[in-house]
Image (cartoon, rainbow, N blue to C red; front, side, top):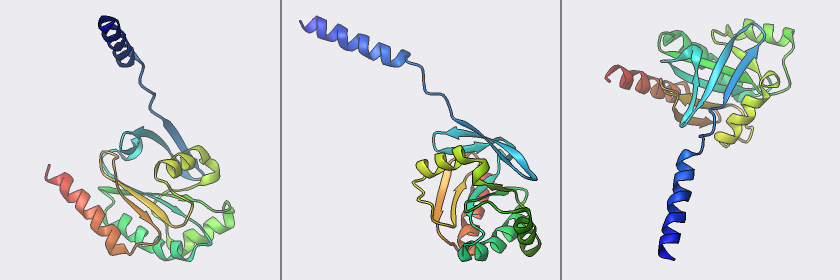
Amino acid sequence: MKRFIFAFIALFALSLSAAPTSPTLTFTIKGMGAPTLHVKESSNGIVIDEYKGKVVLLNFFGKHCPWCMKEIPHLVELQKENAKNFQVVAIHAQQPMTMAERSALQKRFGFNYPIYEYTDNVDFVQYISQRAQWTGSLPFSIIFDQKGSAFKIVPGYAPKEDIEAAIRYLIKSSATK
């Protein structure tokens, strides 16, 4: 009987190790006037092919969110100051912007990073909300290191200094490796 149990356990363990691993999820993020991005799931975050090797801040914002409007100038500054090693990717997560609203925001803030609509990228937004346990509050950001691992989740508004400290830490730690 002991041999039978041992053989069963060994066979079961062998079948688990031979089982195919689940495929990596991939997403294509598209937007009006913004470059198409190719995103792959990783064990600790996501990898955006177009920004490999850069620190990425994925920002969810809304046109009617006062804290988002307060945060945008900081993100524009951080993108300008760290363009070589850093990339902001923004997803507008309220009712879709009209072309007039998008133009007005561009004129007001001078966006220097791509902006996408959640309605064009629902699967990706749902994936992020599940994985990061995001409930939909805005603004909401995730900072990923150069390898795509989630480094910091920022629920709500964060002062420029807080975001900048995380970015500089990641850039500096990568340079010393």
